[in-house]
Structure formats: structure tokens, C-alpha cells
Length: 179
Image (cartoon, rainbow, N blue to C red; front, side, top):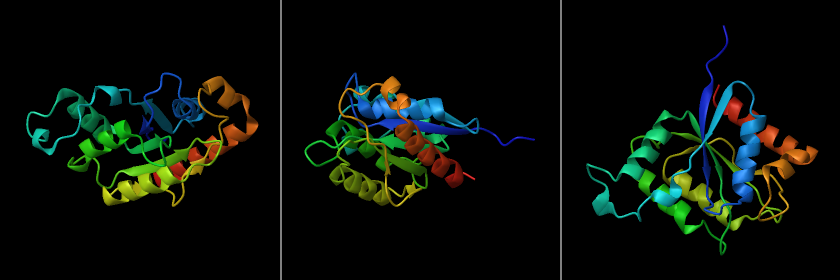
């Protein structure tokens, strides 16, 4: 009897149409072993600005959809760019909507660092935010996926033996953290 597939929600911290972080997540989805089902979350742009006054029933529909997606996931795979040495505002807004949720605490999370320069300011800040939110970080460090820069495509990621190996190492960590 085979183990059930584990659902992993992929959160991209970028709103760009052509995003290296999104390319890294899509490449990971294509490389995922049969035990993992990676699904992208595409609703970040629809989330309203966080306001604690709005954190009451009924929640705004995009927030409810986000929380339900997180609740259905066994783990989260996050690829977030660095902007001005920090977490981009839209992604921080997404996280703010999860702070008061019942679905997020204890959720296993793995971070990808899809930067050619190995950005660390946003990765360190993001890890601290997630720890504060009671995430279970599956690795003390984000997994590096040294992409060539903005506008990198999935095909470019998959064409590199090194990038495929980096993503497979991250996926192995995800599998290990879910067993």
C-alpha cells in the first residue's frame, strides 16, 4: 500500500507576471516526486490590505480562500524575493491575513531562496516572521536555487543540472519533514 500524496501549497512572494520565484516553484512542481502534489496559490493580488477590523465573520472572500487553501495543505513551499532588503509588501500582507487564522500555526514550511546573489535580508526576516506565526520551519536555512535573475523561465531552471539538483534537495527535505 502506498502512502497518500501530501499536498503542498506553493506561495510566491512576487506579483510579477514573469517571476524567477514563480519559475522556481513551477520547476519544483514539475520535479516533485509522486508522494508530493504541489499546487500554486495565485490569489495574492486579490487580497485586500490587512486591517484587523476586517478579521471578523464574514471574512473577505479572497482571505477565506487563502485560509482554506492553507488549511487543505499539508505543508507550504515559499519562494519570496527580496525587495529593498525586506519581504515585499504584498507578501507581508498575505502573511498578515494568516496571523489570526486557525489554519496556519504548526504548518510545515520550507523556504526557497531563488536569488543569483543569495539574498539574505528578506530570507532572514521571512524566517523570523514565520517563526513568530508558529510555523514549523523544515530547515534552519532557506534552500538556495541560484537563478540567473529577474525574468527567469521554468525552462531555464529545468535546463540547469545544478538548479534541478538544488530543487530536488529542497523537495527531499519537504518529503522528510512530512513523514
